[in-house]
Structure formats: C-alpha cells, structure tokens
Image (cartoon, rainbow over all chains, first blue to last red; front, side):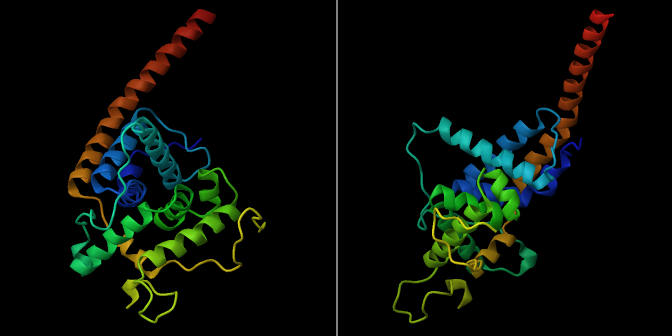
Length: 178
Length: 66
C-alpha cells in the first residue's frame, strides 16, 4: 500500500497554506495550522489508502482545523473582516503589485466569512484543487451537494467582491475584472 | 449526476470568480517553509523510531509464539 512521502508537505506547501488561510481567515493561524498538521502527519508513517497525496494532506489539514476549533470553542471566535485583512506575500516574479495583494486578502476574508458548509466546499475544490469526487469524499457528502454548495459559495464570494449596486454592471463581474 | 433535492441548484455551475485567480500567487512565507522543511527532515528519524518499535513488538510476539 502506498505511503505518504513526507516531502509531499514541502511540495504542496503553498497550496496547503492557502487552504489553511481560507479556513482560518487569519495568516498567523494558517501558519500554526499548517505546522500542527505537519507535526501530526509526520508523527508516524501514513498510508494513503487510495487517496493522492494532496487529498490526504487536505483531509489532515481540515481535521486538524476542526479539532483546533473545537478545542478553542470556549474562546470567542475571531472572524476576519476586510478591515482586519493583513498584508499578503505574493510572488515577486508574478509582476503583482499592491493591488493584487489587496485583492488576495479581500478574497481570503470573503471566503473565511462564508458559512462552514459553503466554505469547506469552495476550499476543497477551488483552493485545494480537489475534484468534486474527492471533495465529496473529504466532506462525507454527495457530489451533487458539493456542486450545490460550490455554486452558492462562488456566488457569495463574487457578490462580496463586487461593489454595491449602482455601478450598473449587473450581477456578474467581481471587482478584479474591471 | 443525481439532482440534490435538498437544495435548488441551477443546472449550470457558477463560474469561478475571476478574483480567485489571485490565490495562485499567494505563497507560504519563508518562515513557514523553513519550519516545515525542518519538520520533514526530522520526520525520517521519528518514523525510523516508530518502525523500530514495531519491529521490536513484532519480534517479541513471534518469539512468544515460538
């Protein structure tokens, strides 16, 4: 049976970090979550059981997130807002300036503000890059439910990132398209 | 594909918001990259200890059965 190569954590680190940030809504918490997940995963050899490495790691990350949230449930929950959004590291080689960094952190805030079910579906498919089938397995639901939640999650994110009515551009384009 | 009757879902998937492409450019900070690299490097030793314990346990069980 295939084992998880520990190097997969390094290979998929950027994606795991994005998933963690989208789940937590906080950059610092995302770093802690990735490190905690790595510690748990690396504590002993892991069997992939038919999953690919990324799906395995996203599942571990999500489980660690839920565990940490339960543990911290007595503390007041911090919800990220656009005002609290933090600076974001972007690839210098990508030619992205401050505007792209602002877009990214607004996006994380919008994702973090989604209801749990919608957020987990969107994170699994659009942030982690899992298939509908993998996302359904991860979230223990049906592919049709993933499609439904994903539809609503994307719709809400697009709406959040679109300025209030009055711009006269209907319901489609997020701000970054303009 | 089965229709999810729990929620009314349009037939066509909602397109991925264009703004979400910005996510691809977000990378892990160097501090996290370094920390994970150290954890992975240490994992070899941790997992070797784990395997050694399993071998000892298995050896003990086999010796007990003989």
